Length: 351
Ligand SMILES: [Zn+2]
Image 1 (cartoon, protein in one colour):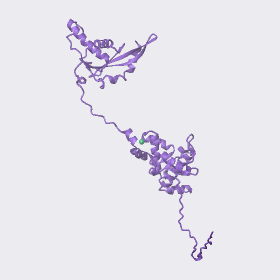
Image 2 (image 1 turned 135 degrees about the vertical axis):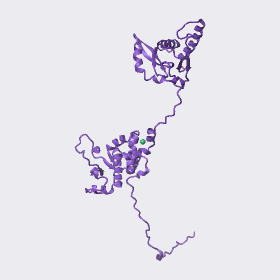
Image 3 (image 1 turned 90 degrees about the horizontal axis):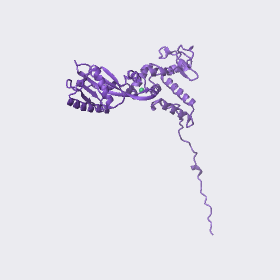
Image 4 (image 1 turned 120 degrees about the vertical axis):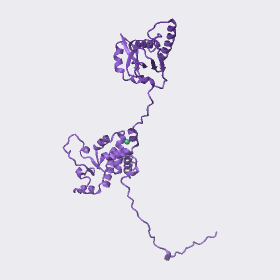
């Protein structure tokens, strides 16, 4: 078996060159806080700040507080750079500074500018209320903070938000900043919108029976039931209201039941006391339907017998009845149902 000799490859040492590293070293530092303009709400901004620092670890409550302080500190450095630097170095701020009237102080523990104020001797107040954190109204952090308060307090008036914010923060020209923020808030606009009152139609003729006696045009309605006690047992009673549509006079009575007979008896008592109405308005109650049929039947029957009934005789015009549809309100009577409760209850107890 033939074998080949090993092949020696000649190496040209003159062609070997040293390796040269060629590159650019860029030092990238991660931002300490996210950009506030990129977040629509204060809570989302804090959450993003916490996540940036914890890098996926489970954050604690202290982490959220630290993130909030970090954002506030950043907003102060952006808004009051010179004052922040001078106060940190324990030097006086310029005489034309916006913070001069607040006697600002640098808080070493939180590294934040706070209001000095004159409440140091106040007892029972928290430190954040005695020395609130100073904020610039035009900074995004302040705007998000106001928006957060507005949302949590369910969009109240500007003074309410201002009072709540003042517990922890001193926003320069705060009322103006809150009003500006609420002007942009859709929910605030919705709540503060004034309803457009539609133009009312002309009054019906029944409301304009001038120079006529009371109860000439009468609306009637039933309400209840009320529970009453007779001895040891409980029974139900209903109320009926007659209301003059022109003079607003009111006549109240009790019904032992919600049937036709009770209604007719109440109507008879009403006519005996107030006089016969020329027209009656009611809703589509079954007792009113039954009463109307009964009245019509009796009128025919009694007129055939020539019976001299006081309110069905031929000397007086008969009562014309109008029954309103379900969707409409009986003119002038149904709206009284709620307001007459205190007057009706004592009457019901007398039964
Ligand atoms: Zn709002």
